[in-house]
Image (cartoon, rainbow, N blue to C red; front, top):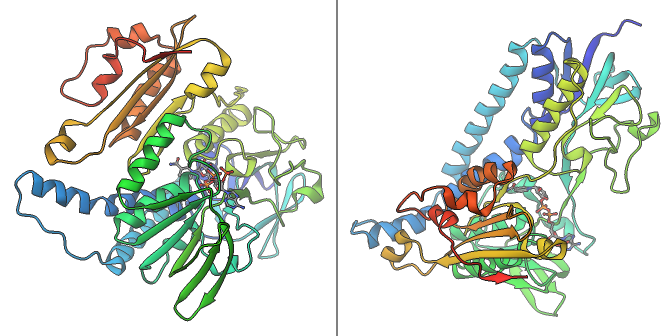
Length: 451
Ligand code: NDP
């Protein structure tokens, strides 16, 4: 049977755009449908605008430091409208680049919603049916609101970049990446920021010592972080949003932002109807080649709910193209993924936490916490942490956790060694770069703990 296309991609985010472009470069006839803006969560309402907001929020610290270093520097007011206008101009520029990358490589773009009709056919919101030999579902995910009375008065990370005005008082709910990053951002921008987390400590699943240090740092930076607390009910009032928490305390804020997790975008896509297996959370179930139970249908990125990170979606896209269009079956490697959480202080991490490693085998823990040179000189109390988790048996570094300025940059590089299976002794054979913070990663002589 002749198909209109070799590949039809549903979703123009990081994963979908990469797969479409690379498949087209290898000679495939490709089309892509995107119902909103090209670039997806990462570019339009995630990583990119978030990181630009992190930069914006760091200037008060930078100016205070400048004074400590002898500059006659004063920070004035922050203009959210000015920043927001520039932010959105930048996002539009990036969106244009994504669009150009596709058209330049011969991908046909449909600015429409696509729904699957059968294993090889999609129906566009324009009414058109299009057939393809392979269909790739890369529709991403969306934030979920908790089931709390009045939750509809809150916003999510989708809306936060679009706010007309910056609130004076903001409550952020959740203890994951998004909540913790935005608590730091908003506080840095001068917003009176409260964060509610229902558990004992934010950033569940990460190294305990690092989590504690980040929480302390956030509090020291002015975030009113309350653990063991959640919203019991909320309502809109003339003077703001009234919130009653699960401990009975009440407060009035101007905005409530929920960062309480994300769910895959699979509803209304026709997937269940054509027999694609979905998991309990609505995610598309795929094998290690990103193939669903219907051989012509593949899925990558957040819609599969494997690891919700842009670079992982891109890896999945590349592996999909290699498997289907280059004749090289390539499973996706989800082992030892480095990542950064852009909290303030920043966190970079790869591999096992101390807790997970200790549960697995006997380990040596090498850790140091100190005031870095630049902070000490400026009279700041912030400390940094470098931590290596080492297998006693193999001496391999099983985990590396860094809480420090630029920890994201550091973990990208340390991650190469960890991914290669470097031992602690190989770390130590590397000469220190002095004076840096990262040199501590190769100069920690004695374990602080053996477990
Ligand atoms: P996460 O799953 O990381 O965190 C969700 C948080 O919300 C958890 O603290 C969870 O608590 C809490 N929560 C869940 N349900 C409720 C509820 N009903 N009431 C109160 N709290 C609740 O999701 P995020 O939305 O923060 O981020 C989604 C994903 O996006 C991340 O997993 C990450 O992969 C990705 N991301 C990555 C970034 C980066 O790389 N820097 C930045 C931003 C996002 P509990 O711990 O108790 O379950």
